[in-house]
Length: 423
Figure 1 (cartoon, rainbow, N blue to C red):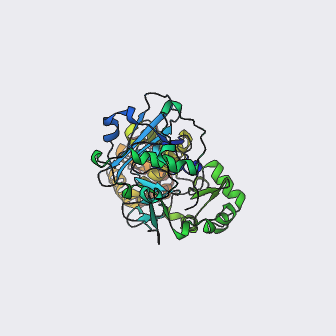
Figure 2 (cartoon, helix red, strand yellow):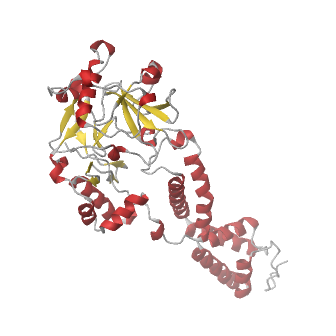
Figure 3 (cartoon, rainbow, N blue to C red):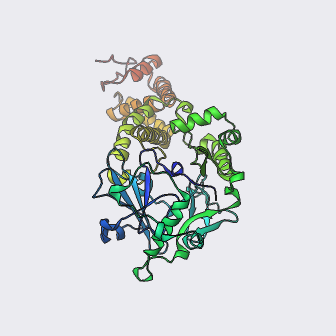
């Protein structure tokens, strides 16, 4: 397994700092921190679907994440809190309990690649098992005769240094000390079931790809890829390892990202620069929905905790809200059967004219709506009304069309062949 770095698991504003001492699946390279001061309720209330986070009572700016599953055990991690004092959003969703190497995840039996490709038929991400994957357990690592619990360290949160660099040799001793504090009677998983990481042929160090290779597979330039990464754009996958300070990806993850980019635009949300101008009515819907959806996504804690973006900032949420508003406006615009509606309003207006009355308020409102949302359909309806009004009732075609386009006042139309002027 290639060496890991905290850089591979660092969030945009929530930095991962330590394993909790009561975790069942420690992340390699991270120090262990005492979590007994949290108390049993904080460590036992998190369910698999809804991880819980709680502020550390002894050190401001730190938050604990607790994620439990009755079969797979418990994850306890210490993060640096975000600007608003919250925990990382990735743990507020249905995230796999155990994820390693930039998103490779374990379901208790098998390892799967990071979710990147969506199955259009089910609306879920494709699950791709990792060929020849092998689980690295705590028991396997502790078979090393160099592991010495007497040299291990268990940090107090108040003494934990935020800039501690990973130390592979020291971590083995820390793991040995962590193991001595687990007893079969306390309900903890046996060490043979405590997952530390995985190995797989596609994750071997000599098979990982750097930035130039990933860019080539995605058919973009290395500079464009670096720009995507620095700006948080393009859904660039998380690297599988950091080697010599440089991100490295597996070939499978690189190919999946390229496949995602090659998918037809119709199966993905249109990018800002690729959108066509909406009709006037649909644009009004978009402008009305964007702030409403933004408020729903950003200000509602329950809803805010149920969606994920790699870079979770206010601007990023606003972009998603704009995307949702665009899609909603597009769908609402296309859902109305405009031709059938135009036929109904045409017959209604002609029925009014047959009795010497002008366009009713309801018909006028529908025609106005059509002119905003489907101007071509509205114009055909006006033309049809004017033609039929001339043929049936001898009203001048041009005057009728002009009156309808300008907006009717509800005044009666004289059957003598003239259309009354607007008031």
